Image (cartoon, rainbow, N blue to C red):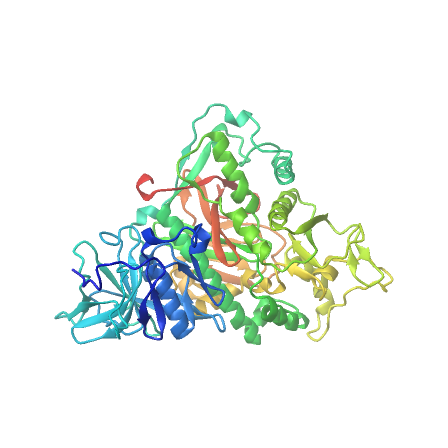
Length: 630
């Protein structure tokens, strides 16, 4: 059994001692927590220099705080301590640089070292959560480490470690740490290092947990009844766009009752993937903006490059929301792309599918999008909007309910909003500002238009590399502001920021592959066709395409599997490894996750009878169920 430091636990939050680097270790004896000091869940959240460390005073909080204070980097949010073993990077907060993180299995050939994280598997003493500690010393026959949430007693005077465990070496050269508890096991240790020799490649524990399936709700004629609130602006707009109270446009009766099911393990992996990929796309965006030979691949007028770089330098942390598109199968999780600019489906995922479940009597599992609205409200509270937020949309019916859904989130955050449909009525005031039809100056904008739409208006003006777009002013002979005059005006703050052009452009995909080769969430992507693609099949995508348009899928024999038309056929192409969407009960199924302020907020499924998801593809309800129920 592990050594006992002291039989008497100290009160919750008491200082127990200090780990190397002067990092405090606190008592996590929850029964003694004072309810006056900790009245609610938020009061248990630990922050340092405005950076979230974890929940007081758990093992994960200590590990993240130790790394931050000693090295200036932190690992991403995890659901359980054992999830740390599956992380691939830490983030250095001084410059948002991603540093590689590698895991080494207990019994493997890479020894633990001071400063690494020791990870326990879930089960036994660490049922459900697992455990993490920071290794402080590695001796010939034992290791010492500091931790929280095991013993809640004072450290002996002069001691900067919590416990020690036996370290042995096998005949094969592997290092093994004895966990001491008979019913718990040490997974291994996690080291921030560029040397991946002998590192573990995490695999899904049970591939079957990554296979979605569908069920039908009990049919009692629910589809014949109204179930959305048409007195609500967003829901009324949705009913109008869908021609009724429905999620699917299918005329088949059964499809009004169909819903998808996904395991908790699959959702946790999607959460990890979303959070990590957001950081990876940000890392690649910075690389693009630092190297003009890469930026030239994105077909953005050169005159706008300084504006892009300024947007990144001043507003990189001001992205509200984006959407990742994933393929989820028993082979794992692969990302297709990141819709970081003008992503859609928030309304369907964040509100409609939850109301569908309530009306149709589906109670199993949890609504996969129930946290999206609250996450958006929190993001808008931190957005820095002062005065009126103008929500600008085109006249498309889908954009109308999407705009109203976002309006509801911003208004819940205390922001005054006005929705503008199209550009009619925009003008200028005496101060030279663009104003809405009521004369209110436009200073903050959230848009459903993509930045690419604005660029199309000025590309003709920027055919020469050194030419600059001419924005209209009040003195022009034709004073009506265009979309580009609004979105590129320096005194108007637009969401999503201008730099989101980069991660949303498919040209980012080959660059990601170059920076993170063979990353388990990525598909091989290149600017040119290679022999490797011809052997396995590939997808051709326009770099600035949207909505699944102008995509071609080829098998290993170069036979066309599927093609879609559209207006992006003149765009440069990138090539991505073919990774087909799974066929689930007759639907090719894509899982989408929503990042809000750079973090996972929820998910949904998009489905189609064909291999390509387009703007016309359905969204069906998704429920998250316990692994055992899948």
